[in-house]
Structures are given as C-alpha cells and as structure tokens.
Amino acid sequence: MSEEKIMESAIRALLYEVSATPKPGLVDRLNNGAHNDMDFFSFIDSSVALHTYFYKIKEAIAALYRQWRTLPPAEAVFQKLVPLGIDAEAKMKQATGGVNTHKGAIYALGLLTSASLECLYLHGCCEIPKILKRVSDYVAPTLEKDFAHQKEALKLSYGQIQYEQMGLLGARGEAYHQYASATEVGIPMLETALERGCDINRAMLHALIGLMASVMDSNVIGRHNVEMLKASQCRANEVLEMGSVFTIEGMAAITAYDQWCIDSYVSHGGCADLLAVSVYLHFVKEI
Ligand SMILES: CC(C)(COP(=O)(O)OP(=O)(O)OC[C@H]1O[C@@H](n2cnc3c(N)ncnc32)[C@H](O[C@H]2O[C@H](COP(=O)(O)OP(=O)(O)OP(=O)(O)O)[C@@H](O)[C@H]2O)[C@@H]1O)[C@@H](O)C(=O)NCCC(=O)NCCS
Ligand SMILES: Nc1ncnc2[nH]cnc12
Image 1 (cartoon, protein in one colour):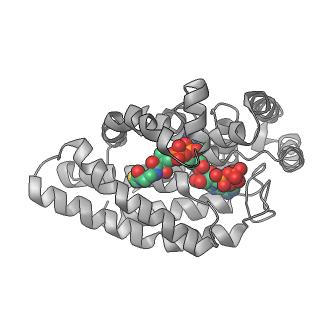
Image 2: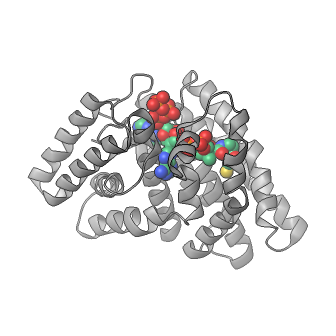
C-alpha cells in the first residue's frame, strides 16, 4: 500500500459506484434513475474534478504527520479537512453545473483517505478497524456542534432537518458509527457475491440492495418521508428474497425496482455513497 494507491482507490471507488448497473433509482450506465439534473457523465466529471481534493488531503495529512511524528489530535485533523471539503464541494458544482453529485462522498472519502494515510504512516499498512475508529474520532467532537448552529443557516439540508425533527444523524452518524453499514452489510455482501463467482458489477449491485434495505437514507426521507423509505426498503428485501443477483428472477426484480424508484421519485443517494465506501475499503483491504 502506498499514498498514491490510497488516493487512487478513492476516485476508483467513485467511478466503480456510478458504473454499477442497473442501480434502482440511481444514476448508472443505463439511465439517470430518479434524477432529472444529472447523468452518468456528471459523475465522471465530478470524480475527475475531485483529484485535486484528494491530492490536497494527502499533502495536509503528510504535513501534519511530519509536524507531530505521531497521531495529531483528531479534532485538529478534522478542522484541516473542513475547508478542503468545502472547496471540493465548490469544484464539484463547477464540474456539474451546480448539481450535487458527491457531497456525501466528498465527506466520507475525505475522512477515510485521511485516516488511511495516517494508518499507513504510523503502522506501515492500512488496517480497516484502526482507520474506522480514527474516522469516528475525527467527527465525534463536531457531531452535536454541527447541528447546534444550524438555526442561522438560510437553507437547512435534508440531514439537518431530520436531526431537528427526528434526531437522525445521517451521513455524520455513519462516520461516527465507524461505517458499520459498510462493515456489516456492504463489504460482506460485496465479497460474498465475488466469492460466489459474480463479476464486480453484480457484486456491487448485491451490496447496494443490502444497503438500501437497511440504511436510514436522508435523501429518501428528505424527498418524501420515513413511510416512503420503509416502502422502498420492503422492495429491496423482496429483491433479496428472490435471490438478488444470483437468480434470473432476482435480476428481473432489480430492474422492476429501478422502474418503481423512477416512477416514485425515490433515490437512495446515501446508499450510493455507502456503496462507494464499501468498495473503497474492499480495495484498501486487497492492496
Ligand atoms: C456532513 C456533511 C455530509 C453535510 O451534511 P448535511 O447535513 O449538509 O447533509 P446531509 O443531508 O446530512 O447529507 C449530505 C449527503 O450525504 C449523503 N447521505 C445521505 N444520507 C446518508 C446516510 N444515511 N449515510 C451516508 N451518506 C448519506 C447524501 O449524498 C449523496 O446523495 C447526493 C445526491 O442525491 P440527491 O438526492 O440528488 O441529493 P440532493 O441534490 O441534495 O437532493 P434532491 O434535491 O435531488 O432531492 C450526493 O450528495 C451524494 O453524495 C447526502 O446528500 C458534509 O458534507 C459536511 O459537513 N460538509 C461541510 C464541509 C466538511 O466539513 N467537509 C468534511 C471533509 S472530510
Ligand atoms: N449513482 C448515483 N446516483 C444518484 N445519486 C448518487 N449519489 C452518489 N452516487 C449516486
């Protein structure tokens, strides 16, 4: 494992995620899912625009390690990442004509690559449990603070509204809980499918359906409500019961689920990011 391999794995995971097809309700190589403002090439452009972000993260983490010669305080590292993340969101919007393709992925993969680099510097390798614990340490101090100042915000995000109304932690909560959705659902389902002979495309689809069946996705709740999320999760579970990617019926059910999501304007954008997180961690494990 090298610094370059870590940063490459992040962009590779973004490109693999959008390429997985057919993803119910999400942008892929076949259709734009439940989106009328972005397509497959929006995600290619956005991913390419993020190469500077990942380069800057590498430079910042390397400089902090040279300065401290050990793990710096987690909150100090996170505070270095915030402006880089804000700048990356601006570059994403420049590349996409103002559309939000990767806001959640910028956050997740920024945290994960930073912790991966620190683990490489300190231990000479990338140990997943150490990386995920460090990610949780980065975000813990700001979890409540982030939501505390939102009253001054002009426009609250889905996640901020859902924290106020339901106490849901959204993307921040996934990081704080060490990406348990990836380690307990995404990665095991991805790797089980690969072990059963699936190609990477079908393995990613299997992992995504598992994530869609279990994750409280703020995008779905934000566009609709919790009832719609539960209805969609029922369909994801039906796909799994029909054999998922391992049977002809399961694949047909995935295609039908895609059409239902499109007709219902349902997009599990958070699960798409968690698929990218699962793929990233799978790559880092394998190198
Ligand atoms: C902490 C931040 C993520 C900001 O949080 P915020 O509260 O502002 O936003 P959230 O709504 O909480 O989530 C932002 C994105 O995170 C993804 N997401 C949602 N739910 C989950 C979940 N349960 N687990 C993981 N990730 C989740 C999701 O991003 C993906 O979907 C977006 C595309 O879908 P779409 O429906 O098109 O989205 P919209 O256009 O917004 O909605 P529509 O109008 O179309 O209906 C795309 O972003 C995907 O990535 C959520 O959108 C973090 O960004 C932050 O703090 N930023 C500030 C800078 C910073 O500190 N950076 C740190 C760098 S390490
Ligand atoms: N493929 C995709 N489609 C829609 N929203 C997404 N957010 C992240 N990846 C996505």
